[in-house]
Amino acid sequence: MKIFDLTGKCALVTGAGTGLGLGMAKALLEAGAKVAFAGRRLEKLEQAISDLDSHLREQALAVQLDVTSSSNIQGAISTIEARLGPIDILVNNAGNAFSGTVLESDRDLWAAQLETNVIGLSQVSRYVASSMIKRQAKGSIVNIASILGVRSNIGSAAYSASKSAVIGLTRTMALELAKKDIRVNAILPGVFKTELADWMDNEAALNNVRSRVPTGRIGVVEDLAGPILLLASEAGRHMTGAIIPVDGGHLSASL
Image: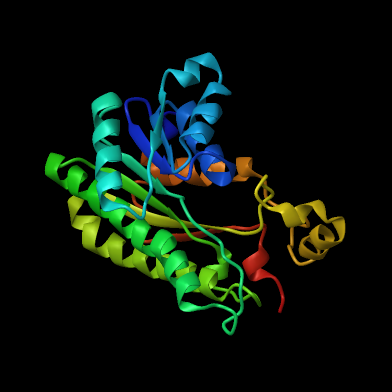
């Protein structure tokens, strides 16, 4: 449908080398956008792009980006703007997931978790939004949080706190940037099957999670294609500050 068409738009997806980031980057490409695949491991990004169909590879760019480095963020944005054009869509997907209870989580673990998931996200948003405002251009920012930002899980103290912060930051950014024609929304994935989730090789653990998800299944990366296109395109033009779970009803499950 034309309302979801992203032809002529430029998107930046952080953490795009694998998993959910890669899936969302592909969805944006297939909708017609030029997409910068960004992340710390350039070889992963280049491999991801080389695996694309030839007509999609022409619209993609691999860019090394460490969200914990302000100078690196600025350099990456300059490279993207020079090669693909000004950024219209930002997907803040880069993140760490450190396990540990409150008693096990020392200051270094907390600092590493928050530096990437919250501070890094805020700084990438800051530079991209500033460029949008300077150009007086409409824009869309999509932050990837988690259902653990609103529900609890033993052993994920710092991660859950960081994703709660992303939800709060999303709402504040939405308020501050609304008058600048920049929409800011968040997607809250539930449990998704990716190559990074080693525990999913354990069938008993998988069945335990499935039993608690109303739809009875684990998410796959393709399940995020619709939500990301909604928020990135004109289809979501009246949406800002929205917090959207994509979790098979996991948040609504009985306690």
